[in-house]
Length: 265
Image (cartoon, rainbow, N blue to C red; front, side):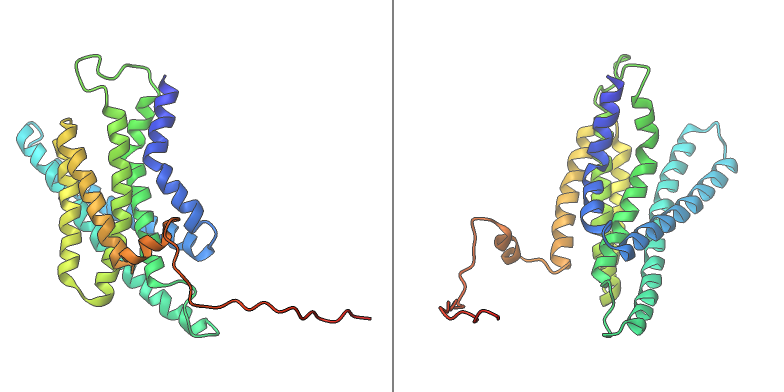
């Protein structure tokens, strides 16, 4: 039973991200480099946030439970702000790299666009964030023990897996929106991305009341995904064009000729 829970929750949390990596990233060396470098930037932001929280806890009254809970909220907020600050730093680094790639290319065009780098960097932030948020939970899911035996929710593991999947998607969407806002100087959009990230982090503090956290989080994921889709250049027309039942009529005329090339001697 423990192995079934472990593999089920693992594929729920990281199955979509793994599919995206295999289908859209793994075949391009530059995208793989952007993916790995983005994960490194996120890890540095986590390290700094952990140091700030650890120092604040050591300097505070550790017997005051309310104060410690407040410091936990403070640490989560600092972590979110540092993640977005390092996302901005990563954008600046990729812009410099993009200029260098343009200078080296023969046709004057970069081998990877800013929108592609935004998507891959967001995916890297999401994957590494999901790994660090759920890895201990997955380790405990193997057993021994029974979830909910003392009256707690028996849906702890599967809920954590769905929360992780939503966060991975959200980071991917935030990366697309964030890079586009930086490119076009839309500071209000940057503020909305940071605010939605703070909201997502705050919703997790509502657990174990999973209905209050999971439902709003998935509503935010769907709305942010639609926002990222249109930001990346998508439209309703492109959605309809992808449907198998909607085929556009072509005005071109196919001309068939009965002439054949003469056989060679």
